[in-house]
Length: 263
Image (cartoon, rainbow, N blue to C red):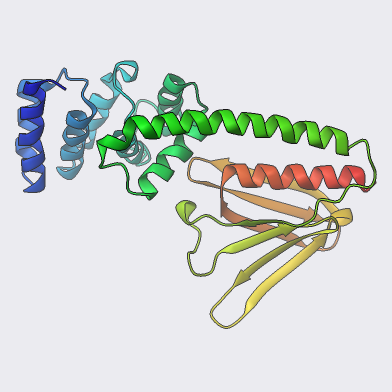
């Protein structure tokens, strides 16, 4: 960021703090509309949102060249929130995250998970963490790939044996995807059954289905969370929501594998 951009940013941050959003919009359009600085772009788009100029925001976002704008999760989450309004934008939030994720060589789902995690820990306002955070992301991805490869090799070996014991696997609905912080939903899987539980103020609701009685497993994944439905032959249905996409995929994979080895 050069000295002039720093001067512009100081002015815009002050106007934003004082809720002078019209000044932010006018100044940006007169002086710096061609800037690729994510901080300046963030305050400009935010000012349009505050002034409820969503059509103008749509037009501006559609013209942005995301390949030229440095990764910035604060800006990305703001744009995602606008796109999710559904006001006839030129492309949806999924397309937007695919464009941004491609810059890092990630899947859009991974990029979104990282952006939500980044917002959750409150690091987004501190630019000093940015390079370190992005480096950590890349390291985590490499580690995840190695872990997935090890898991795939382990599953392949276990499938050759009929004496496989998975133990207990437990999953809890995510607060980031709409789950309750006080009374979350819980799913657990062992060698014999899938159990669903959800506490309330004075009681606990629960149900289970034996692995051998499960007929189908359906999952629904999206940018705002995932749900899973487990059907049985006469023993009811388990439906759970507000989980991470990766959790429901893993749950379905475990159930299908247990069904194979228990035949």
